[in-house]
Length: 123
Image (cartoon, rainbow, N blue to C red; front, side, top):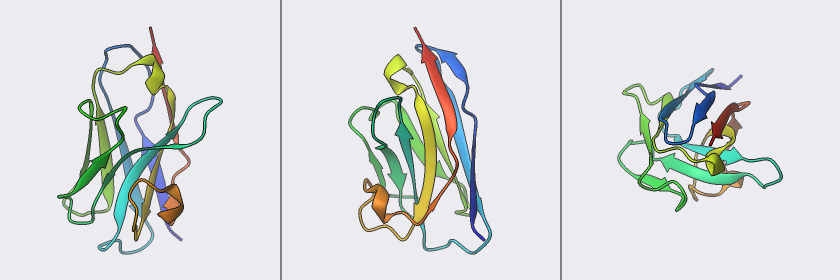
């Protein structure tokens, strides 16, 4: 079966940089888009960033645009989220997702999800 595993989350100070990684396995994913979502305590899951199957088109939430960068590797079965200038409000569990997506920012459009990795940003 399909499995997606995130890694890289940890405790950092405000202003720090951090890179999250996610790798998918279990089948061929050549036509699949990938995205990142996050869920903070007391809040609903929200869109962070997405990247098309080609790796060319990207989408970002307003809250992270200019600070976060999403990218795929050449095999198109993994995705990273490079984060800079982290803020306490970025604290959340970050989830990677994959699917044949029609709406990059819509969680319901994704077929597969990882278990999440915790990012904590302290002042």
